[in-house]
Length: 245
Ligand code: CA
Image 1 (cartoon, rainbow, N blue to C red):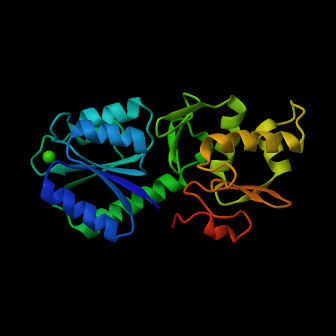
Image 2 (cartoon, rainbow, N blue to C red):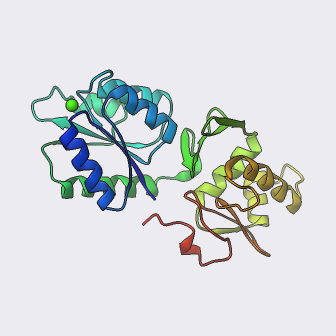
Image 3 (cartoon, rainbow, N blue to C red):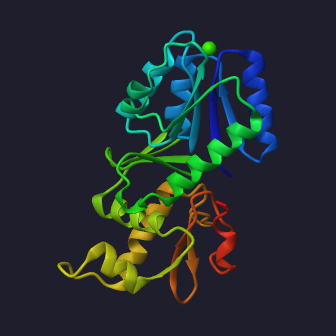
């Protein structure tokens, strides 16, 4: 399920946004001040962040800057009040993806959110470099770490390369030869067993229960298939693994 974080201090507006988005089928997190919003964003790495500018404890621009400094790749939609000192250029320089001027309708907001999601989904995923969410975990491609709750694991370069390739091809079944060619290349001398060993290591870190994987799924007799939000079995129809539409 797509996760959206709403950072807005006006209670009535925030509640309306939260309710509207939940009704639209999104998983919604909320924060009423900038500090809490930043903390939630960094911990949960939601796909989209709705960010008010005038916020207690930390203003929207400062939140945005901190998010990008921390390499969070969530799409950010600025919510700015009419008459507010809102500098579009500065906003985009800080890494905002879009903005909406208050007041706006729920319908307008949902259209913008959908457009943002389409854009991020269409992005070339093979160059992941910041933080990405996988189920309950956050992987940081720059820091070579994977965090779930209070647990943090280091990831080797090969583990990250393999994960990046799996994520870039989410929903597709990848055979071992394809994985070997794409992740290991010709310089090294890996065997199909090398792939399995690395999958095993990754599963110990990203799977809630490595014995019952939901992210790196085994497709028997073929290879593996990745699901960011958690699929059930690798042997079902491909469309069940990722519900991103
Ligand atoms: Ca405000």
